[in-house]
Image 1 (cartoon, helix red, strand yellow):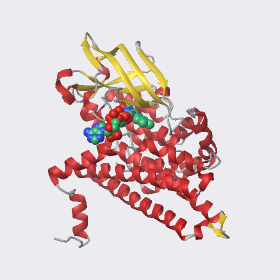
Image 2 (cartoon, rainbow, N blue to C red):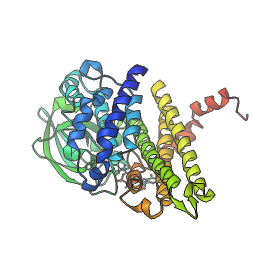
Image 3 (cartoon, helix red, strand yellow):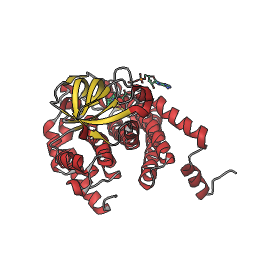
Image 4 (tube, rainbow, N blue to C red):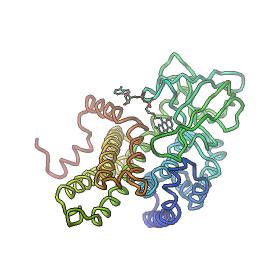
Length: 398
Ligand SMILES: Cc1cc2nc3c(=O)[nH]c(=O)nc-3n(C[C@H](O)[C@H](O)[C@H](O)COP(=O)(O)OP(=O)(O)OC[C@H]3O[C@@H](n4cnc5c(N)ncnc54)[C@H](O)[C@@H]3O)c2cc1C
């Protein structure tokens, strides 16, 4: 149920103030120290933003699809790392909102809304990334519940997480129809939170390994139906892809704004470099590509909000592909536009460039988005939404 537009504006205005006053001055330090900003997480919680994914019945103010995506964009314009820290809460809480029992939701959602519990989504393993159905973490049925054994990798916010949705095989012979989802608490016996990865970008947002050695999970901690976990995992990906798109757009916008400001100030050959056509064309190309990517993101958001159809899902894959690849290109060009200063940590553009690379990898790599789009084309042709739009504008060529 979307929230009231004036309420949305109010929330966005308070987020913009928080980002300018509190996040922007810390963005470089979060990256350099690779340290999770726990104080900023609490301050964001106090603004009520974690409640946007959560229904009012469980102390939230949502669920609302669009507002959190707009917030991810706003935060990423100064700190893509903190944008991911924020938005991962949505990716991780949505399965609980959509598939949890009333008891599970009453237990977890109010504490997630208040920022007291950080949720994580644990699907990927050392041997199973793009091919998520090939996970080998096992959940063996025992008296009163299940016993989990296996390893997870690259889990966002894992190092600071409190409650983990862990995907494991309950029927190893049944492929993706043999996967179930479990709610596992930090501190469960046999559950070890491993090291944080030392990544190229999005530093300060921990990406963590998890180990499960005979971890007992009571039967009432299974999320959704047994053997339906793969569907749960996949159902959260459309929003996650739009979130990733939002962060990529935000980072590219932040970098481009910086490069434009710089190009207006920096004088070479007797005039500001933006007055050299070659450089202005470079920035113009970035602005045009970014505006185009933003348009498909908005189109995909509108489609997903209207109807969770295969078409909307395909548009989300298209948005993820175009927004993340555009952001990588734009941020790289911004570094170029600023010469040696673009490479220096005195300016944020090198950080934006490093932050953009992971966006092309998680929530499905660019190749996986193309694979999904290609499958759709093979089965249904061009997405109906695109066709309907073309027809509505009288642009169909017959
Ligand atoms: C910053 C970050 C945060 C993450 N957060 C989470 C999280 O919170 N939870 C979680 O579960 N996971 C998370 N991940 C994991 C992420 O989802 C995986 O890294 C991603 O799915 C890719 O898997 P992989 O790294 O194993 O690459 P692989 O699957 O091994 O792919 C390697 C290369 O092969 C290509 N490839 C693979 N299959 C095909 C194919 N069929 N056709 C063409 N090319 C192919 C890929 O595109 C890629 O270029 C995160 C990763 C990162 C980097």
